[in-house]
Amino acid sequence: MNTESLQRLYTKIREDHARFPDAPPVVPLDDFFTGNTDEECIAPNQWGDGRPPLEEFYRRFAEIQRRPNVSAVLVGIHGDWEYNQKHENLWVPAENIHIYTDATAEEVTEWISGLASDGAGEGWPYGEHPSAPPLPAGHKVMTVFWD
Image (tube, rainbow, N blue to C red; front, side, top):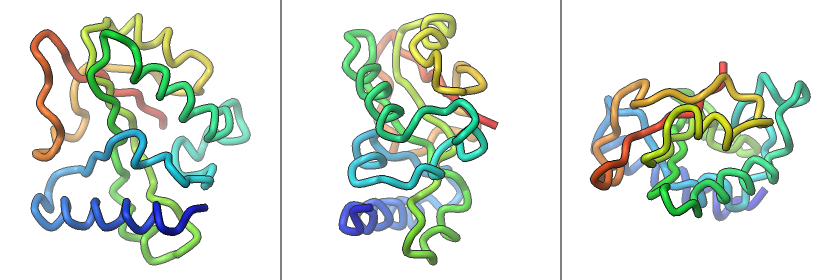
């Protein structure tokens, strides 16, 4: 685990949380996965039960991010992030992944096949974070979620 990347990530989340304490934090895909080797930081209930390794997870979402009809991929941070911050060997926990796209739910579900998710749905499940980038015209938020 890259502790420098982890500290940068926690700093970014703490700053956002200080400005918007009631909003669920989100971070860019690369900020969440760069230097991250904590297999239980996302979809921990599926790790060892069908979810591919973190490296594959990152590779797949990076491919999605490069699609011409995708403008952003953000990681929604789990509400327990402050607990993990107190334990230096734990990465920031993720709750879900948000994809800005004009694709349908069916298309997004195809993109995430094999990632042991519970599917994808339109919208922000806990509300849009005020620091999230604006949606381009014609795009919507599709959220990938796990139990």
